[in-house]
Length: 323
Image (cartoon, rainbow, N blue to C red; front, side, top):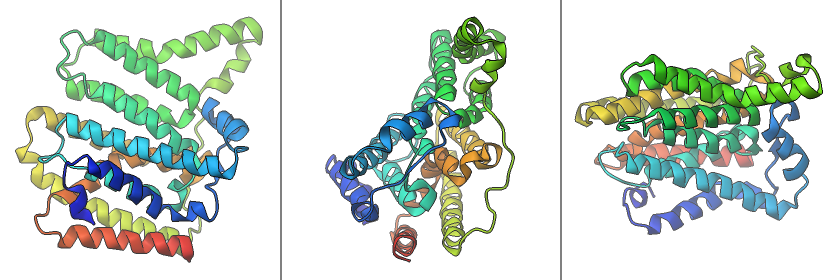
């Protein structure tokens, strides 16, 4: 199975669709759940009030469209930036496996939908390297991030990401940082102005991200434990091969990977910092995690290790869905 996605042929788009349908087989027996807390921004409000009441068949199609669009967009991003030695469909392949592997990622949640915003921010952010006049792009990145936080509060975890990424990708210039911060704050400025004129300043606090520090791993089920162990093993295998490939990348690509590593580290803490949705909020870690795990599938010349990773993931998926 893995060797099919090592090819760059466009037929692999069809294989991605078939893979997603097969791995998320349970949605054909029971429609995907819609998980959202309406107080976490506009996006959860939309999911609760407009998406959850939809017919079962529409929810199934929507679920597949969300996952496939994100997987394909991530794959295009990795290919255009030449993040791997060889162009393939393995980043999208890995992304789809991860969405089916962990039960908290296998639902229509605010975090899963917000992944589209995370990928969009990364697309803009990684384009900064070769910009001669970057301020417009930096302002747009900040504006997208500010609007994304209003849509889904836990995306606020990306604020330090974009600030430090600006330092990694470009030489430090205080004016560029200020432009980026202006973009982030502008949506909140308009919201503040509206609230001030209509309701009073005290109502503005409802639009600010709320931190809720709790441990999401309270008495986890055996299925959750075994899944997390498998994800950790796949990640460390991918990380091993990623480090092995670093010397072959040009400086520009190394900086891109530095940004993705920063995204991965910070988003791992999101379920703890924004714990209202428990592990459902961890969905935004999917994007950087899939990128690093992809090395475990793409780098080994022999398919022994990639096949072990793949079939062990399939075994856990089947156990979680039928167990």
